[in-house]
Length: 314
Ligand code: HSE
Image 1 (cartoon, helix red, strand yellow):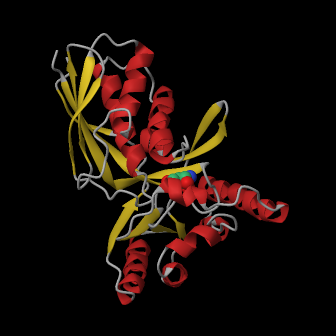
Image 2 (cartoon, protein in one colour; image 1 turned 90 degrees about the horizontal axis):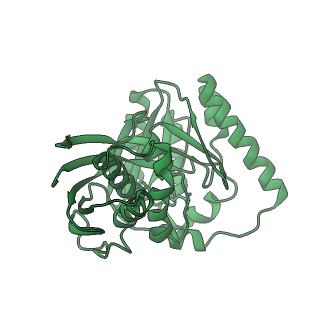
């Protein structure tokens, strides 16, 4: 009893330009940490949250880490309860899958504390419960890569069918986060519910091209396919200097650039670290010129996903 585990789960880039709600990949940093402790009694309690400026709900039924852990405990009919500490180590409402990282760290830790009754894949539906409450939609394109690592495709939601896509070893991601918050629920409400057939044709051509490019390490094809004619034209209006940031990334040699998840972060993919770093400098300069503070991350694709940082589970 009182066994404790500390788990890190990574930030993720969802949509990856053309794949709204179906594509995503994990970054090495940033990410969230969750500490879970088994205790006598039933149910989940959130004892502490740090790094959120008091913004996240402490109520288990409204907190993504709490919901994910509770639904997992109900599923396995756990005989014990759990206490959670959530340490936010990335900005909220950033488009970097903050709620998914918390939910994933929570279910991975809970699973380990109870002797790993479920596989990593089997935990996805519980992490998605957290997303449903945090964003109003149980999308899996942050939770799946945060949980499984690497680049994932949600081939189907019903039934859930998640495919891991191999990526070139040298692929690097640049993310620039302007210091503003956009809540995913709000960024979903502004989208059109219907799309034109001619836009759908462009979009599914690009999805297929992007997947093929990743699987064959064809960098030119990856770049050509990073186009979004459906979501980006609408959401980019919420991001200061978006078109200039994108132009700066591509002029610096990035393969392509688009909105990370529901924004406001903007990401670019590059064929090596040097170009990714250089693209980041130019992207950041656009925001500085506009007087907007920003944070820059440069990361390889994180192929491992969550990490157990410490554990005294016997
Ligand atoms: N696919 C989701 C969206 C990701 O774009 O709304 C949110 O991070």
